[in-house]
Image (cartoon, rainbow, N blue to C red; front, side, top):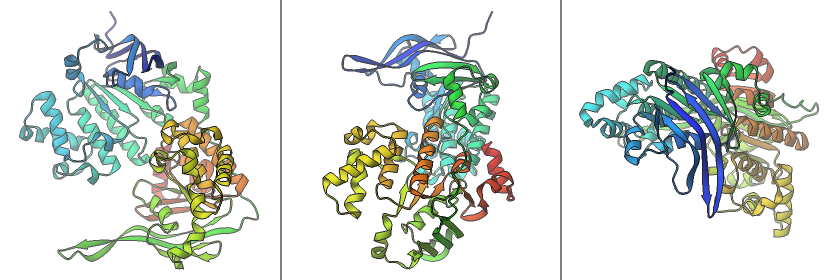
Length: 530
């Protein structure tokens, strides 16, 4: 007799009600997870991965959510038809969930100890003083250094990797039978990502826990998954073991996803390219203040002695883990942070200029941020967002501004008819195109790209990179590309600078460093990225 699977989705259908209409978002999904098994759920944004995962615990608000068919069984018992009282016994206890962004899930007003103690009080009826020992043990297990000393810390006092570890501790504190992880490593650099994946794998083995891992990163799937389910437009197009899926993908969409991993090579560098930006000994430091009078006793260096040259039509990649000084460099070059050292742009000494003298150069140096959603004003429509820079830097009529916006939208591959819509009405990839259009409309010569593809899935990432290459070719744009995704850097950049704790570890020709890195840290980064 066959054993009962830990989790079984049978022909699950999920729809959102809009007035009298039902919008089907998940259609006929059948998944199965055994004890101590990892099932990876992959697909691009909007494919229905998170809806499927949240449906397991019935966390989607009903209405508007309607379950149109099928069933969800956990240990042979239906969750879809269970009462709220039964679900409360399962949620956070037998089935736990880790979300993509820990700052959304952690309460900023409560200490780490209080938030973890609440879990034990709720599910096991433990008192705070009794729970403390178990909390310390669990935090220690997930790799929080000096766990006892960190109990009183608040979420904002932790790094991105530490916050994610606290989320994992909160999820495994009750020793669940099933853990759902919804893109828990997307915003983390490769070193921390590798640590989190190793931790999840170890916990799974120790506790015999099933793992439903949602991701769009195929490298993670290769390392972690036993079986893989590929979703597209609310349907499961292919299910297979990890080895079979990567060696013999059956569905054209799966083949397309695997092909999107090959992002191509950088554009050939123009032979007559003149130096556009020259940086010498760039340093950024922050004062360390102590004592009652807050006297400055020392300096903390966020960036030390960075020097490089950037030509028109060339891309320089800045890589390194979180806190290495990558974004600091970008902000310092734009004179948005106080910095020491020399910055020459088109032969002009920017480091000597006042804020007023900088104004003519602001339009020629633009930045595109990591998260297009927080970078775009939700109260403005696309036309207003993109035209904002023109109002500041160029004296144009309203009709001229609108015409320029239409041309720029066409250039970044968006329909100009969408210009009256608001950011919330667009996907992540479309929002990133809007952010690029906003920077592009001022016809800059240098674009600082701060992790512009990190939160996007592989297929959309490939589209954005193709767009950046075509814009570079057309306008001879120079890029300073900040990223922790080494595959993306390799496909776009001519030079690469590896940073660690604000210091340059290695720099030079991109292909040379990728093929034969000399620094141990670079070798480690490349190894983790494979």
